Length: 236
Length: 403
Ligand SMILES: Nc1ncnc2c1ncn2[C@@H]1O[C@H](COP(=O)(O)OP(=O)(O)OP(=O)(O)O)[C@@H](O)[C@H]1O
Ligand SMILES: [Mg+2]
Image (cartoon, rainbow over all chains, first blue to last red; front, side):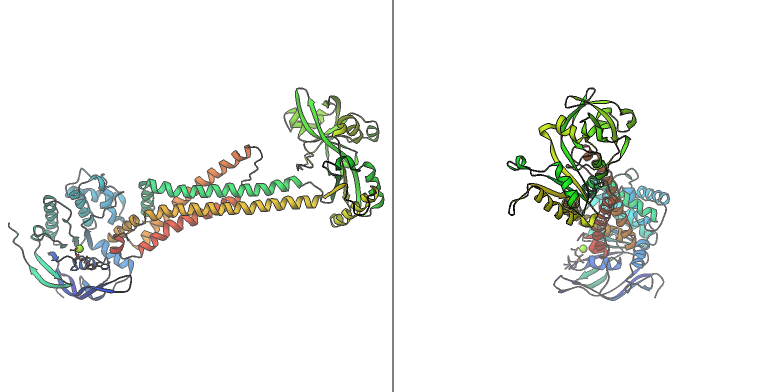
């Protein structure tokens, strides 16, 4: 396995089961490779399984069949809660379409949250959270609650949170879906900066204006990958 | 790390003020009600115990029938005592007393007290001890002397303080039914305060003085016997009944013109009443517990999807199940602990307040606090922790959806 290969999926399948026991196959055998430092967009029809795939990569739910290697280690077989929590905590940073901030906590506390579970002292993590918030142009909003921020600002808080534990990968599910185009562009710039530090971004998106920032586009259709390297003109 | 989680728990409680308040309210109401209700129950039991604690269980009382026709025809008399003592073999001793109510005054204070006219032997029968002075003499008895022995609580009634030195009131004069009566003795606290025999609050005068001079037609005669021992109470009752019928020359088929009562069955029936009350109160407490439990449950269930989402977020940023469970458990423990303490404080504040009302007798008991506290712990932990346990077992994606 090449050294810079970060993620490798082999024949990954995922089915959901309804309450009546009925099986809904969603991913029907996904083969996929993502290198360190790549910015990849996941696109495809609605209901095609993009979120499902991203959540498997992020260890937010288990796969039904196939293999998942992260940095060469087979983690598709992992079911142990603290091992998975460790990966989510140290390796991944999530950005969701609906932000998923804790409404009762300030921006600063939301951003520090991953560091609480990494066992970092309050002083240290809040100093870092402050820096990260300044980095996403929210230095003057650190004590605001999510309800006191605009959608774009909330998403930037969420990104700062994703960056808190210096992850290898940012996993973003339609991060600009709820934002206007200008806020969307700011988010993309942050992702590009992250990529420049030889880190990886995997982003589900519907909008070409976001996808054009990606190095390549993986196209999903009906639970299968139909293309690994679509490319959009990023100069327009 | 542990401290961090405690901090998170506190933060969650403080930032969800309404939810915290409402669920705490459930615990507070549950705990304080249980404490008060258990207090009322043990109060009732203690009251019964106190009332009869100095009552000799071998005591048997005989008195005339009360009622429209019987009072006039009642033949109960002092001579019955001598007749019974002469002929009965299971009766140890006996005395006649007259009972009534008298207005008693000292200085500017006056009060209506139960009065008991008796002979010196009665003090022994009734288990009464003098704390100062002496009992009546035979001469005083035959001479209808105007002397009195006062009960323990008269010290407070007339001298304003029950710690007044009993020696100091000897020789003082009370105005009883407009006649001057000299105090020759003071009784020790007896504790017996049943409606029938309120010794502490009574004034005792010689039998003859009470009957002829003070009470007059208000006098009610009562015969007081002691059975040989506790086992012979029921045979002694049979004997006394038969002997009184004989002495009153009642023909077969005629009803008794007197009533007999024994102390044991008085205590028993009062205890039974207290037990009934305890059962009733326990049901009330159970209902309150269920209702406040449902209240807490509602508050928790209303917020369960919000909390499930919170758990999803914590999982997504790398919180372990055990961190999440510790946080929610701590939250539940803090919530029910503080709620429980407030509940105990309120309960213990209500009890003296209730006691200050007339006819209320509530005893703060450790049992009450223990039951109330275990309840609050159970409810708080179950409703605070159980939903969190469920949510923490979900895949993070499912938790994020908030069910
Ligand atoms: N918990 C679930 N139970 C049953 N079926 C589910 C569940 N979650 C998703 N699905 C189904 O799986 C399929 C893929 O869902 P997924 O969310 O991955 O699609 P998507 O590509 O992200 O779509 P969109 O672009 O609309 O977000 C859908 O048909 C959906 O109905
Ligand atoms: Mg999706």
